[in-house]
Amino acid sequence: MERNPGVFRKAGTARAVQWERAGLEWLASAAAGGGARVVGIVGSDASQLCIEQISQVAPSAKMAREFGAALALTHGAGTGRDTDDGRMSFGLGPIDASGKAFEGDGLQGPAGEQLALPLAHEGEYTSWGPMFGELRVAPLVRASGDLFDADDRALFGRLVARLRDGVFDDDEPPARVHGDLWAGNVLFDAKGAVLIDPTAYSGHRLDDLAALTLFGAPHLARIIEGYASAHSFSHGWRDLVPLHSLHLVLLHAALFGGGYAREALEIARRYV
Image (cartoon, rainbow, N blue to C red; front, side):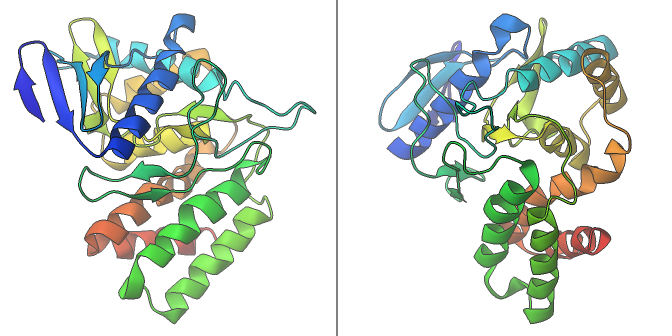
């Protein structure tokens, strides 16, 4: 990304620019209701996305707590597109201001190494587990090639079956999640937290909180404290954080191999 005064210019394919812009706008639309602040879009064309430059500062515990509370409100904004009969839709991509959902697959992973992020159709997944198993876990296991042997794939298959059966589901409605909320995608300036680089979809609240936990966000305990002040956690939620992190662990395994594959297997064994 090139630096110009006040602007970041992020090069990418037309599809990558369209995808990231859609996610930023969808997340930003929740900010009016108290949701987390999102980096401002200066402009875009078929080869680059121009966003505001953030003058970063070290986050304080207070900033972290405020971010946690705001993130809970972003999640609570939901999809904006639940089905007419009241069923919930997990796995949808960003919804634009006209109510149109992002078409086709999204993208996940670092620029230049992105893989497809399968997105659902409205009403296709009315609970989190089947969506997570079929659109997040299974495709990345396939994308990992020979990284996993037949026994490993059978293990993931058993986990996908349990997810499909709703073993880990709760009553939480779809959340408007960032989708790649590791610490590097939460910047802090003098005003507080700013979200960048989303892989946005309608998922579960714990999808983002697991990402923050996975790579150790600063003042994580304060973020969780702030989140809990705006939304109560279900009993035993901490036990499910590793499961919700499996998406990003498998993504890293598919892209980088190594220890991420072993970590993904350890997580899968824990839940089958």
